[in-house]
Amino acid sequence: DTGVSQNPRHKITKRGQNVTFRCDPISEHNRLYWYRQTLGQGPEFLTYFQNEAQLEKSRLLSDRFSAERPKGSFSTLEIQRTEQGDSAMYLCASSSMQGEAFFGQGTRLTVV
Amino acid sequence: DQQVKQNSPSLSVQEGRISILNCDYTNSMFDYFLWYKKYPAEGPTFLISISSIKDKNEDGRFTVFLNKSAKHLSLHIVPSQPGDSAVYFCAAKGGNAGGTSYGKLTFGQGTILTVHP
Image (cartoon, rainbow over all chains, first blue to last red; front, top):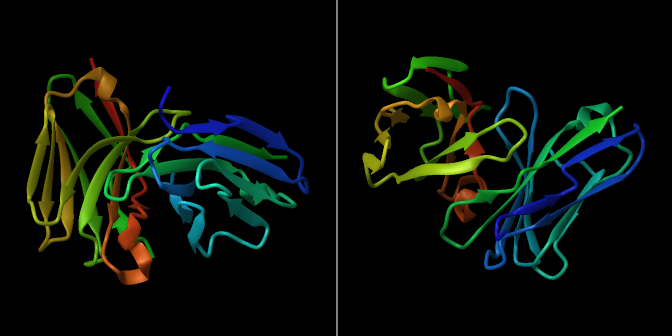
């Protein structure tokens, strides 16, 4: 399977706990994006990497959120001290410099 | 500030007929538009795109039309099939405003398409 892979697919956590999600992009893609989608809305941009450099962060990304792409390959998104409002589908996408973005299947986070 | 809007939350169509999904945008810096299809519990799947230098792009049963002066685009599916039932998202990117030139997508809210047999 050469598509974008996200793990885990589902995560249930208690409020206040930290969670980390992983994204493995398509291997030849140097651009990687994180989006968040809530019910009834389209995906909202969170952050963007070109290779290992994080070039933009949305205002949606509070201080509790951090993303890394240490070697320009896979990426992690960590949420510290989770809140119920963090419950959403977290989507990762990758693309080449000029091509369309391909999405992973997402990680569904439920904060109880 | 919703820069990409899909004003129809849902659309119901009979199998074999045409489905027309609409999308409006406000940011004149957008220069590339895409449609994604999404099934429940899956990520969006790229369907078709169009550059702002064109007004039509066709791929099999799917055609996207762009009216730049009206800041409007539409996706036509003909003939519609039950397997087309999904949520369809319009997305836009491009320009230099807000650093969007690298490919960050701005999505609409989505339209749920149901194709009845």
